[in-house]
Image 1 (cartoon, protein in one colour):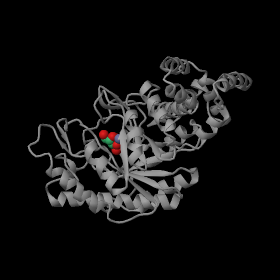
Image 2 (tube, protein in one colour; image 1 turned 180 degrees about the vertical axis):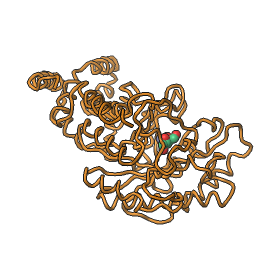
Image 3 (cartoon, rainbow, N blue to C red; image 1 turned 45 degrees about the vertical axis):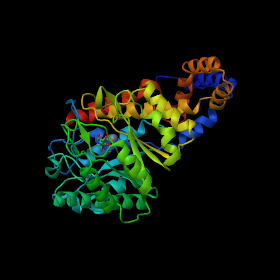
Image 4 (cartoon, rainbow, N blue to C red; image 1 turned 135 degrees about the horizontal axis):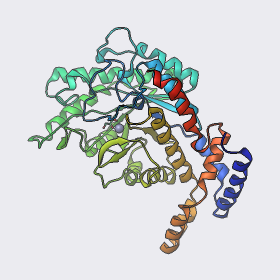
Length: 419
Ligand code: RNT
Ligand code: ZN
């Protein structure tokens, strides 16, 4: 280890005092962080390829760019890679699986996938105490090639995707039941038009009907979620599943609404939406991502956006109501590093949010003392939070500072270069 335990301890003591002076209990913040489980997206490990159709093209207006060596070619390799990532994160975390990550000797049509095709994922999750979340894969398929799925005008194609989503919910139910923690099954469809449509409403009626069929059966271990988007590659002018559509849909059907940080106008932030939505929606799912100029799904960095998101979760006391998932895919750097950096950033941002003297900030606001509010907000930006983060890592027995890169580099030499 590069850093001595004694030094981490003494830096922590000093930091603890600085926080105590603001009325913040660092032990409490660490204890709350420990309970947070984020859902790691399986698709960072193989550029959203999956194992249904090896070498198939990614479609649906999303793209993983780069050709860094070492991507997982099998489910066993992907699990092995994930084990490395989890070993570098403090706490216990979930996995977010897509339907195309099924395991089977023969080709299985997506409308007939079954829990048995995910048994090995279930065994691995049980052994490693990971909860699992799930997603139907409504892209990268011949029947999604013209850009429409659940809102397709052709009834047969619509039916195929309805069946796929129903089958996916049942797999979510299976994971939820087997693992003793509900699975969130999130529906995202790419449906939309490149150019200005004539009729914006008909596809939305069709989507509503399809979703109602998908959700007809009540399940007990599965939570449903729907994910809106403003535009995608090839659906620049119109996306059927917009924010307004899904927000009202989720509210009326009592299911979860998903907010992906890359799915809105570049000047909008999802952080700003959380407090409003929580007034009406019981639970939300987040896809924490980073768009650079567009929904580019860059690795989550420790930026203002990320901090604003975690602040809103904590300030609204919503750690139990917001499921935190990650959604990015970078193929231009070591994929395990991409996973680890984004996950550690998310956890670190959550910790900093938990270290805020929120009561003090609110009091200044109520007193209309906006000068002090601003002074405090600025002061908080240079508080010694990294000493607390180091302590979290030390306590949880995961690498402190940059040491996690040593593990990743070793694994790259030992495992990834051989692929
Ligand atoms: C696409 C959505 C969706 C996907 C994953 C792979 O814009 O964000 O969540 O990224 O399902
Ligand atoms: Zn997403």
